[in-house]
Structure formats: structure tokens, C-alpha cells
Length: 210
Image (cartoon, rainbow, N blue to C red; front, side, top):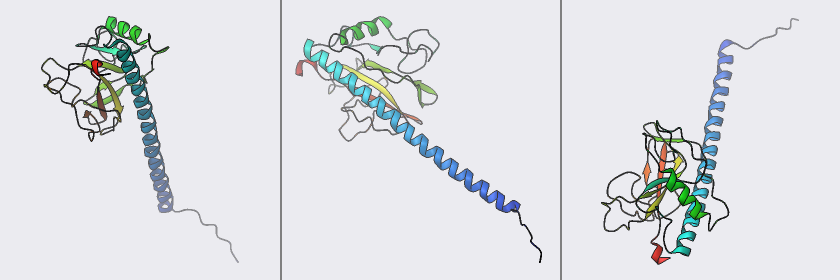
């Protein structure tokens, strides 16, 4: 009686390799999805902290910090400086946009009068459309040609990873860019969705109504 040992055929080995590759791909996708949700949850939580801090300051002082109305600038500390060609701090979109460092310092110092420390936004850059990167948080005023339905108070902007993400915070402005703005309804989930990321633009309240 003869014992014959039989190895795997090439077809069987290929099938095993394909199955392993499929399982690995599924695991990577699942992990990336979990990581994206965790990152976005953190970003939204910090945005809420900033919103509450700004509202607290505005409630106490019945006005926004000096320079906050009508300007575009980064908020918070340790903002990057390498998103575009100029050496100024960056927080919003690339494209050689200059953000006023003086306004950032003034605003931060004002918020520190009601908070012991400033909320720290994740520094990871997000590409949300056509290779345009965004990181950090910024204050952005409604443009001078804003629609009559929107007060000329600043908005709080931040970015989320992945398209069509829910900004959670409300109310939202209709866009993150130039043009006429309106306040979106409560059913709107974000201000703008790009190919790979989402822009959130939160409408800050009228200080006289706080």
C-alpha cells in the first residue's frame, strides 16, 4: 500500500490568495471608515467648544471680539503655515490666502477672558475638493452683498473628512465661498460637499439677542 502526499495545486493557491486579498481589503475599508468617523466626531466636538466659547464671550460683552465682524482669519493656536505659498498661518483653504495673524491673536486673547484655555482643533489637513486643502478653524464674515435674510455677523468654518458628512451643528450658511448667503433649514446636513471632503459654515447669533 502506498501513501501519496498531495500538495496544493496552483489554482487552489490562487483561490486562497484571492480570498485573503478580499478579506484584507474589507478590513482596510472598515478601518478607514471607523477612523474617518472618529476624526470627524473629534472635529465636530472641538467646533462645538469653539461655538460655545464664542457665544459665551458675546453674551458677556454683547458684542463679538474686536475685528471679528467683516474679516476672515484663523482662530486658535498652533495653526500650520505650509498650506500655500505665503508664510502666514493657514486654517481655511489653500491658494496663497493671507490670514491676518494680528486678528487671530486679538481674537484668541478675547476668548481667553472667558475660557482658561482654547479648544484645540486637529491639525490634519483635509482635501475636500480638487486638491484644495483645509485644516483648522476660521471666522468668516458674510460678504457685503449678503441677502437681506442674513445678518452680517461672522460664521464659524471647519472641514470634515469625506463627502456628504453631517456637520451636526446648526444653523448652517449655504456656502463656504463668495456670493450671496442664506441660512439653511434644519434638514440641511452641510454647507458644501466636495469630492473627498465637506465644508461646514455655522451661523453665529446676533449678540443683541443673547
